[in-house]
Image (tube, rainbow over all chains, first blue to last red):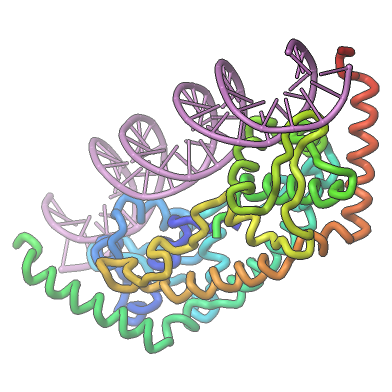
Length: 158
Length: 158
DNA sequence: TTTATTCTTGACTATTTTGCTCGGGTATTG
DNA sequence: CAATACCCGAGCAAAATAGTCAAGAATAAA
């Protein structure tokens, strides 16, 4: 599996969403601020997440994004495969034609690895992590920080 | 962990080495042919493998590379970390300063994942795989293929 | 001792991915 | 209608990936 910052960003954003889920839709601008991810990049990631049915966009003022399912029904594996379209460890995609139409020496190794990796990530749902006290602590810190920033740099009046 | 073709190539080459270990040093040219990896690229990979003490180079005619240790003392994890210097899933390298000097939301997730991944790959030694009948079968096929190619395109006489 | 063989090294290059910007849309609410 | 926020596509710089190319050094065999 491909484990890049891209997947990390997506999971981070989805956790942010899960944490603030009950407070209504969360705007990408907010996520961008609290998680330190560029807004335009978030837009790209969320386009993919939406296509996979993981989030729903709510347009208009007061809009934003919300989870399309309960947090306990969204796995980390889903999030990563949604944004990292190339999820294979293997070049043959498991077909076994890695070398001139035959299996290469390491075919089975990567197959096993791939499976283990997926099983691990598929066993972790968003809520599992969000409920951890350490995570809640970090989220609280981020909220404080965010409020402080709004005080220092308030939105321009309408 | 970073799982790229680079690491795959390295493990493949090391398996080839392990399979033909008792027949004396194996040249990079041979590995290049049987495994379909560019010779110059192999040179780069083996430079790193040598620095990590996984292989030994034998110069001169009849030379090549051989494993520096017994195949049951070389793990897949070692091979991959040898060529993929950047082995971290996390941007903070486990230090926990992922976001403005603090932990990011997904810090623990990647930490756990990283650990699991490493444990899995560290539990697999070269000999474990080389001994499997399916692998031996593939190796035999490759040897046949190689002989055939030498017959069709023999080395120019001296 | 010459020569062929093979490792060894370094610099250079093409392609892909990553992370991001910009400029426009479109739907929705007040 | 105007502000908010999603939506969409093109493009782009930097880094990583996956190589190539050229020259040199050690050694075994002729």
